[in-house]
Image (cartoon, rainbow, N blue to C red; front, side, top):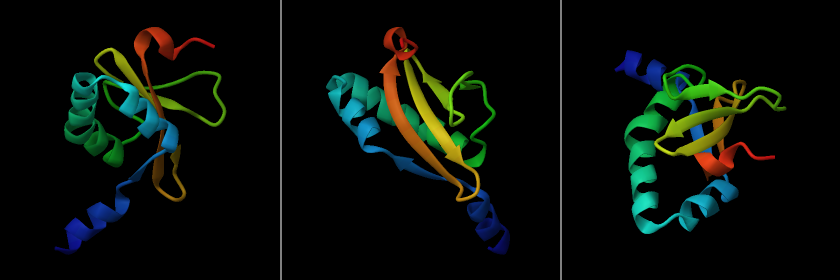
Length: 102
């Protein structure tokens, strides 16, 4: 039991920002359901334990603060990591075609 508690202490917490929730709500019902299912089953467990490494994770260049993206199908989830507080802030979600436009 004690090892399990230590594992939970080393995991990051996830905070969904208002913008992230609004963007998720703007998706069609089927797209929103698809993304939410992938977040809950695959993305959040992986990001909680290792937010910097994974096959769908990439650090974006030229962003301050350091910003990361997680790929879910044709969608990109953008987040920042507070390593001191061990919190991951989910910033926004965009379709790939719109995600990298400035």
